[in-house]
Image (cartoon, rainbow, N blue to C red):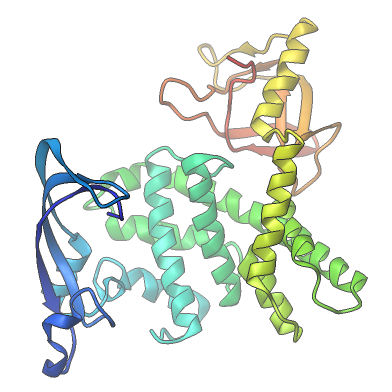
Length: 369
């Protein structure tokens, strides 16, 4: 898989996908272009390869073999990419109808439709498996792919909320082979709807800060560190920052952005920056020392009335309020929500008041180990 690690001789099967037989040549295998596709790989794991080139026999040699389902589907159906198979193309066609634009493979709109189709499929399966959007680990991966799809929906001019509709189509399209999708239909719809609303709020705040920054610079391209802060603090994606700058006739320097982001991250580490989750645990420990113990009511009820908010955080700061569009951490004196433990993900749901409603995206134990 790389310069070092388990390896050995292999036997591969490649399939010619091109139109011109002259391109069906051995030197094109694993080479330039997309006309030849590997559909099978049989690796005889025999050695451990080290950085200096040394090959040491493995204590237990093995055989690693596999065939890609979507790749072999391309061959069987006579198409040239995974996106043209009946596994994905119907989802793309649905996205095309939703935005009222023709699907053209070699176009920006076509790429956006493929992103939406692919990520809606991934998001639906992940949520059905009990993974929910968050800021850490696989939950963060889910959030990133969902927000990338949501951004491409904006590029297509889709009316929000659109992502729940695409995910519902995914469920209908694949429920016969994967009935667990149908079982999780309502959960998928609720989670993706909530995330789209959060994204809209985040996007609005981030774009406003970018406009303010451009005003401060007199219309010139802001420094890389200032742009990186928009991503680090407000979650404004680099490709979106680039799109806005270029639409105003300004240049975007990717290297300067990366350098600025590295400086911010180094600053966080130097200052002993704590993640929001760690900060919640620290606050909860302080509250516990004051005699507060959050009572778990989940064994007796799924809805608890009269709970008191003991503390709130936004990012790494303790706050006294959260407004519409904010995302933060809330510590309660009692709760029916089961916290992540023993391999089970934390509960999701709502915290409601007479004049407000907050969506609970995850539940964690606040007291440190």
